[in-house]
Image (cartoon, rainbow, N blue to C red; front, side):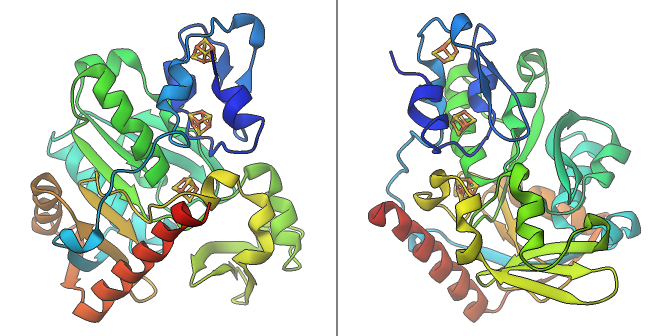
Length: 319
Ligand code: SF4
Ligand code: SF4
Ligand code: SF4
């Protein structure tokens, strides 16, 4: 019977989402900041892992044009989030709102810093605030899912499209829908172990020189503490990615309640796509509390997002 180590991890088709670690009943898979660790001695060939792996799940046939996209440019008003966020700090503001308003009891998020991802499940407001800021690494957030919390508590999950693809399978297994799903836009991601190699390509030896990292219009851009900006074309660092990204067809998950990214917004603002009624409720509550300011995205920006969505979708056909 197939397992994810033989079929995905060893063939470089793993995006380290952590779902297989969560589902493995014997502990044969263990979480790791780079790739799940596999102990063949503990494997009982149940194949639960391969069935949940986002790299193994076909995308539903969806046409972005069938979705009524409500898009906004959003900026947080909370200073502690503003100083940490790469863009507008919308994700952290939404999660904070959902916890405060008791719409969720726990949040599954990626904490740590822009230098190292540290996924966590938490109901602590300070930890949520300090998690603000994008991390351009694969992060095994689903390995943090706790079966007790999943059974007893409401939960909000912030993840990449591959995380949410696996989460859909988890929802089928636990026979309930996760209360809040926020999808981050994702064009491509990178292994943590190659971070120093990537930054050395733009002449940076010391990570302390780095203020912010962004991926915009095909460029991996580093903003330095001294105000300088350096960048590299993402094509030149593609070898530091998993092949899972080469055939990933989702710019953001259409199964989310809200999707957040930066395409279509000015620097310092987040692009927010509201996809469900639940998403709308959180968005409005966040506005009401004064945690964010927003303005509708112009139709040409919505068209740009759809164009980028379709472009990423083509990866499925190519690979
Ligand atoms: S025990 Fe099952 S879930 Fe765990 S690694 Fe083996 S096949 Fe995968
Ligand atoms: S993509 Fe996720 S589920 Fe698949 S092997 Fe990697 S960590 Fe496991
Ligand atoms: S491109 Fe797809 S597979 Fe790669 S990290 Fe992003 S969502 Fe995951």
